[in-house]
Image 1: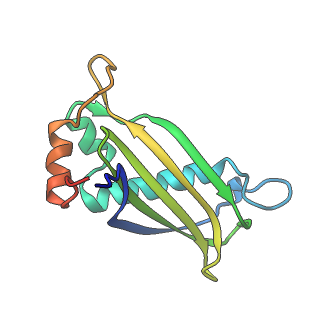
Image 2 (image 1 turned 90 degrees about the horizontal axis):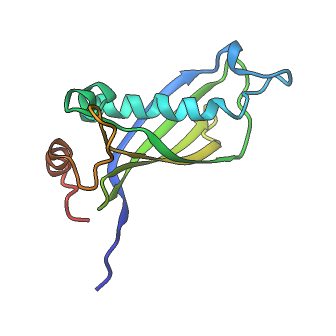
Length: 148
């Protein structure tokens, strides 16, 4: 029997943004470090859409610091471009949040892909949760994601 520990889920959110002047470098292209911010924009929009926002997690007594990021750059974005960030929740049996990202331009070309991993830490003492917090189990149940 094969047991998968990471499965792309059916939970995906698409978010758009316009590249700001402050995000481009002297070559007039988006500086590579801003793509992490774009991932965060996508993750926050995902959280608002699916009831897993930073503020909702905080109300439950947890923070979700990022412990790992991965980016792969394909094409540049420039000042004024519209970008579309597709954020997909990756279902895993571990007590963590994992997302994949695909940023595309208006021509539907892939600009950048990546992943982030976040862990649950208790707000009161910073301790990392080794098991799913109860609210996260309920969220996974609501979205039919407990069967990993």
